Length: 58
Image 1 (cartoon, rainbow, N blue to C red):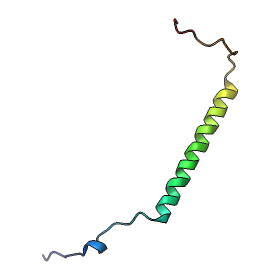
Image 2 (image 1 turned 120 degrees about the vertical axis):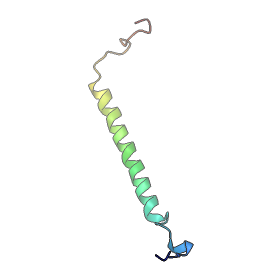
Image 3 (image 1 turned 30 degrees about the horizontal axis):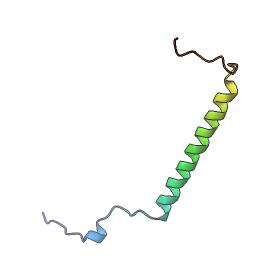
Image 4 (image 1 turned 180 degrees about the vertical axis):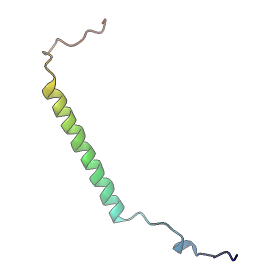
Protein backbone atom coordinates (compact mmCIF):
# COMPACT_ATOMS: atom_id res chain seq x y z
CA UNK A 1 0.00 0.00 0.00
CA UNK A 2 1.45 3.33 -1.04
CA UNK A 3 0.86 6.48 1.01
CA UNK A 4 -0.47 9.35 -1.05
CA UNK A 5 1.19 12.70 -0.30
CA UNK A 6 -1.18 15.63 -0.62
CA UNK A 7 0.06 19.24 -0.63
CA UNK A 8 -1.14 21.35 2.31
CA UNK A 9 -3.14 23.78 0.18
CA UNK A 10 -5.09 20.90 -1.40
CA UNK A 11 -5.76 19.04 1.88
CA UNK A 12 -8.12 21.60 3.37
CA UNK A 13 -11.77 20.77 3.92
CA UNK A 14 -12.94 24.24 3.08
CA UNK A 15 -12.30 27.88 3.82
CA UNK A 16 -13.99 30.58 5.81
CA UNK A 17 -15.32 32.87 3.15
CA UNK A 18 -18.13 35.24 2.38
CA UNK A 19 -20.78 32.50 2.31
CA UNK A 20 -19.89 31.36 5.84
CA UNK A 21 -20.05 34.94 7.13
CA UNK A 22 -23.42 35.50 5.42
CA UNK A 23 -24.90 32.37 6.99
CA UNK A 24 -23.51 33.29 10.41
CA UNK A 25 -24.97 36.81 10.28
CA UNK A 26 -28.35 35.56 9.00
CA UNK A 27 -28.54 33.00 11.82
CA UNK A 28 -27.68 35.67 14.38
CA UNK A 29 -30.38 38.00 13.04
CA UNK A 30 -32.96 35.19 13.10
CA UNK A 31 -32.03 34.42 16.70
CA UNK A 32 -32.57 38.08 17.67
CA UNK A 33 -35.95 38.14 15.90
CA UNK A 34 -37.04 34.96 17.70
CA UNK A 35 -35.84 36.32 21.04
CA UNK A 36 -37.68 39.61 20.47
CA UNK A 37 -40.86 37.75 19.52
CA UNK A 38 -40.65 35.65 22.68
CA UNK A 39 -40.15 38.78 24.81
CA UNK A 40 -43.14 40.53 23.25
CA UNK A 41 -45.32 37.42 23.57
CA UNK A 42 -44.27 36.99 27.21
CA UNK A 43 -45.26 40.56 28.03
CA UNK A 44 -48.60 40.17 26.21
CA UNK A 45 -49.63 37.09 28.21
CA UNK A 46 -48.49 38.51 31.57
CA UNK A 47 -51.69 39.53 33.35
CA UNK A 48 -50.05 40.47 36.66
CA UNK A 49 -50.94 44.04 37.64
CA UNK A 50 -47.93 46.35 38.05
CA UNK A 51 -46.53 46.22 41.60
CA UNK A 52 -48.26 42.88 42.30
CA UNK A 53 -45.25 40.64 41.60
CA UNK A 54 -43.90 38.11 44.05
CA UNK A 55 -42.26 39.53 47.15
CA UNK A 56 -38.67 38.53 47.98
CA UNK A 57 -39.76 36.98 51.34
CA UNK A 58 -41.89 34.37 49.62
